[in-house]
Length: 240
Image 1 (cartoon, rainbow, N blue to C red):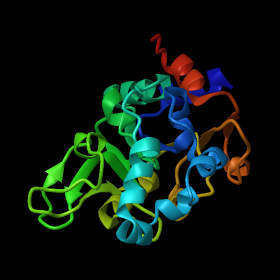
Image 2: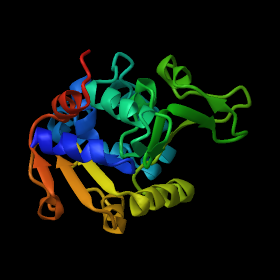
Image 3: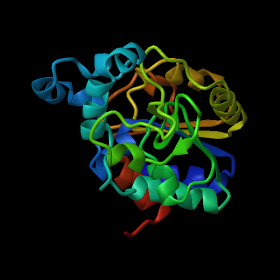
């Protein structure tokens, strides 16, 4: 299967990658859905509740306590999957990365065309004056982070009950629709509306890299169950 994937990559220059949490687990960022029990042991509310718009608005102090503790991973670094995708973009083969992750590791690895469906912890803004802040504004705060104008600094991430950014959605759908090869990796494809974007693919080959089975397996030309960093690292030739 590795050789087959390598052959597909070598023969195509219009590849799009669609990824989820499994892309970053090899960087030490836990899969959110697999560690709910751990979160619930420490917090009074389930993570889906804490990471909702209504909870953020009504209990911002509890929100930021959880957010700083569980959503920020300052020590995380790109793994072979991130590095391989950045290399494929550099070679002119990969046209876009579409990610459900908010960790910013694709950009850290060197990827330029990244559509972040659920936003990024690296971007934050004042809800009152809209001034931009980097991740340190929240990471280094100990309470509710505030702007000089007095407004609350909100992470630029899509919380439960919030809609996806229209421009990001349009760009992601267009990239998928125009691709010849779609590589799907590290995602259960259970999160909508993002998973529904795959239905716009009209190209030739679908590659699915995920450790567990998904509902989309039957549509894929190549399915590999190994860790995605291992697969892409070997196929693209990433040593470190």
